[in-house]
Image (cartoon, rainbow, N blue to C red; front, side, top):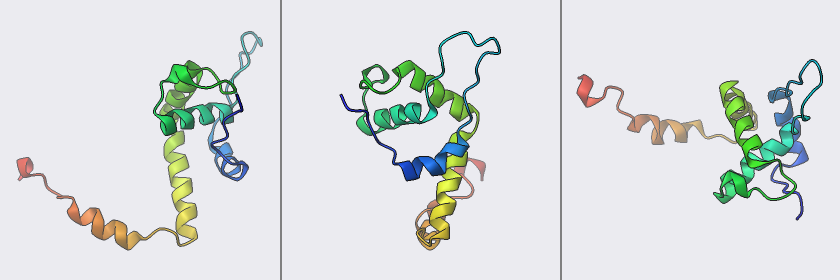
Length: 117
């Protein structure tokens, strides 16, 4: 089966610096860590297809590897950094409509829930 390419080179070039390099043991034992990009491809594949982690296609790391990396990235704040980076890029290009966000989202949020009044 072909390797799943859900992330373009341009997209990876933007995101790559946000993903910390996997740590190796000092003594060099153990299996080499799976590539960050390959793990991210696995995460994206599961999100896109809704499939189980264990059903990742050949050419991608093992599902448990991708899941553990996803969890580690969440703990390290990688997803928030990536989200902020992508939003700032869209904003710089004028592709975000902040007025829409304000009128459609924030105005509908009740600042004080009924139970706290």
